[in-house]
Length: 116
Image (cartoon, rainbow, N blue to C red; front, side, top):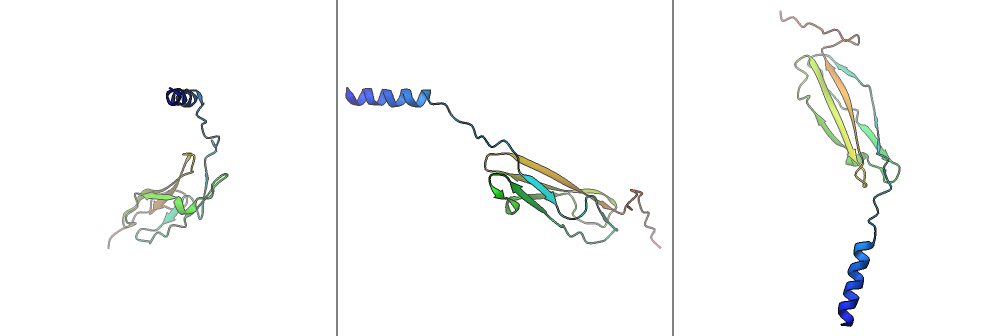
């Protein structure tokens, strides 16, 4: 009987104890290095300057940044992106995106490449 009573008290304590949500609601900050947008000539190699990610609780998260891009080659003029994502230990997500403009001048006019 004593064991049953102890079990019931523990169960009641578990059911009535509030679950505390994380108090960390501030997402990490991602700082892009280099220019945004980045301009490339057609055929120019893209070297990603990268990012730095910092969280007020977790500290430096740069090593946990996921990089996604649709720029597989700069052989064709177009607007491409490099997307950076990072999540802190509380699940707060930050996403930033760099535009990579291939075959555009800084005034956003397309450059026409003529084959001879």
